[in-house]
Amino acid sequence: MKILVINGPNINLLGLREPDIYGKQSYADLIAYIQKSAAELDLEVSCFQSNHEGAIVDAIQAAYGVYDGIVINPAAYTHTSIAILDALKAVALPAVEVHISDVDSREAFRQISFAGLACQTRFAGFGFEGYRKAMEYLKAFQTSAR
Ligand code: DQA
Image 1: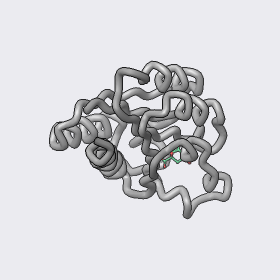
Image 2: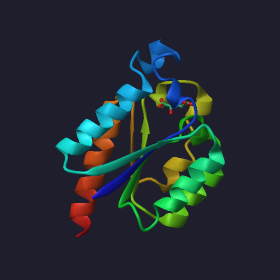
Image 3: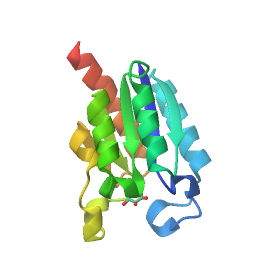
Image 4: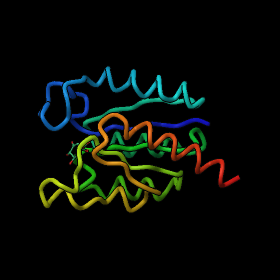
């Protein structure tokens, strides 16, 4: 099973960025964690990060016919981007929303998720582990759909 992990703006600055909220580990540490988890789960994974909304839309479109599922942390675009929501709906791949922080206990503007409307489920507030939980979910989801 092939999974595409998409991370949105400022996730490349993990470690530097608000470490009290996002932790001290870097984006490279996140990728290493995702790759290790995927290997343990017997999944093939590719990781993509962009600070640009259109580039994320392009990546979702290009996933069609190539990947079996998407794990997405759209970061700030979660709360603003109908384009990302529409792209997820267009390709209709099973998708899971991830947030490193517990968005529900933060500012009111983080309580809305457009991308989440096209996702099967969401893991928020589990740190890096949320990405592993999302991959586990997609694996189980594919098995149950067979
Ligand atoms: C985030 C939460 C978003 O509200 C924020 O804009 C981010 C990161 C998270 O992973 O906790 O950039 O998606």
